Image 1 (cartoon, one colour):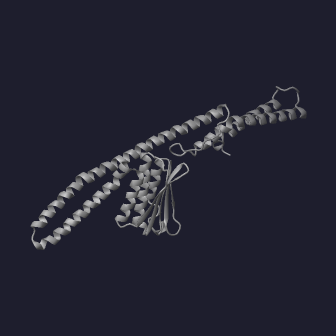
Image 2: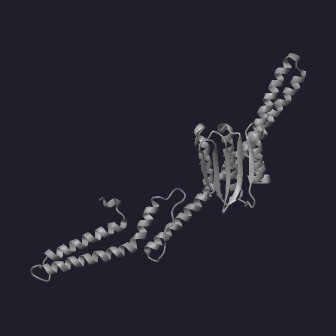
Image 3: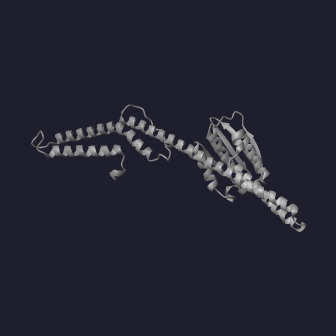
Length: 317
């Protein structure tokens, strides 16, 4: 057994035991003894005394060092951001103080993780908003000028060219509509103006309007105010889930629900499509949903058994 991989308790016990055994052996063979010759009774007393000392030492060390070993074991399993199991901190000894310090460290890490996550989420949404504004204000306006120019050119062009110009104008109009749709997806103004439920309803309507399946919506009563950051995450997860349905599921029906379950709020998007085994699987979209949920202390669960896929997001209410 390598001493490096042994717990602190056993290291101290082994070291103390080795020192005591060496001291007892030295007492038996050295001139510092009671009788000129060691008799069996004296050796027996020394061995029994050594055993009692080792047992008492082990018991006392167990009480003092067991919390230290538990902290060492738990620190090896702490995940990024301070996610770790809390330990029993009863008592007032050094071990209990170490456990309390460990808990304080976890709380600081968790606070820092939440602060960093909030900043990252705000930066993502700010960048999305900037891109959406540039698409709408610059590219959208440029295409609008192109549309007006094509319209005027079509009116003055010979009859044999008007058909081609009309096709170009419709193509430019389609591009303008796509740019407006992308800008709206990047930064949904309805989420800021009317709230989460209205934004989810508009999102479901857009899915059907752009050739996707019909989306049946269910919003439960008594939904709490989640705060802007959590609402953005809920909206983005619903958006990604519905996008996956349109692109990969070949579904005919989708159910979108937002309900309160206990202290949590649960978003669920369920379809009757081909399931993950016949589509893209757990790609970057699902990974992104899980990462976003983790930013606000939530979790995403994806189930796909045979036909159909269910994406469930649970966030603290």
